[in-house]
Image (cartoon, rainbow, N blue to C red; front, top):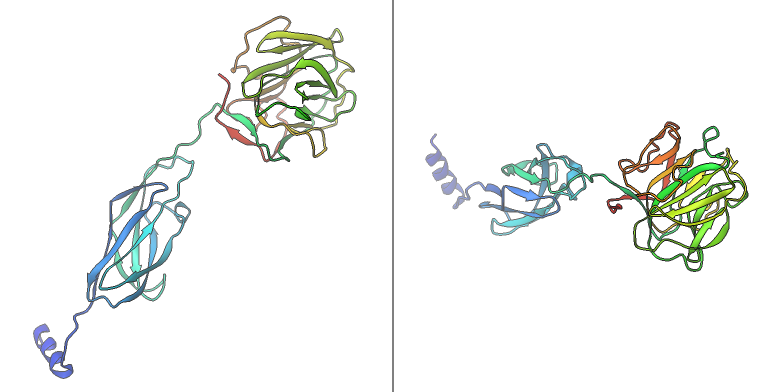
Length: 328
């Protein structure tokens, strides 16, 4: 029996004939940027009004590349629309593709139509070094550096240096850069009430200007004193106090000892601890110094949450992020 005869027979028996529905699913463009929405239009003929379902099909992209990978669409008079949004991330992945299917009954129901492939334009880039460490003004953010051997027992000859950019002045409290605690013989560096803090004592030397990158270096040459340099310029020489002898306590960067207080707010970069006096006169600071034979700790610009010194101290991070704000 021919199709025509079938149709004629159906019309004769029922008095009417409804052709079977047809379905189309059309994206408004063949590509979409990460983070942007793309509208898909349902079309066709003789579609029964109601709720239909759509699902994303990965052709290189994965479920994690979308905020939602399925949903519903209301179709009336053979027309409806919905949007799909690829996720904007911070990772370079290259172009990826996906398509979308229209389904009946549920997101696993019969496929009624499939769209042409759509390309996701990769608009994100992996962050590129150099990086600093960002200490937000939220409390309880610090980097814990493990103790290994006698690395922190530096005696009376050492250099502790870093680049510093406080969010605001330390008026009314202590902003710890690095500390084993406030007791004698421990590393304890920071700012307090607008001045330099060393080994628990507030000096008369003003802290570096907040909001501006400043290279800070404490240099002890074995004579009982410390010379403080800002941007390579001698600021003052003061009594170093007891030798640094605590080999057992961990160092916390951005928090005072083991106490949940006295946090640093702002950014730090190029944190280096050396077992020699690196600078004995004014010098030109750089952002390229790195690991040398006397380096006990180096949190550099490429991986500031990894100690690249030979000691390779274990670093445990709590709430500190990497920033592309870096001294120049």
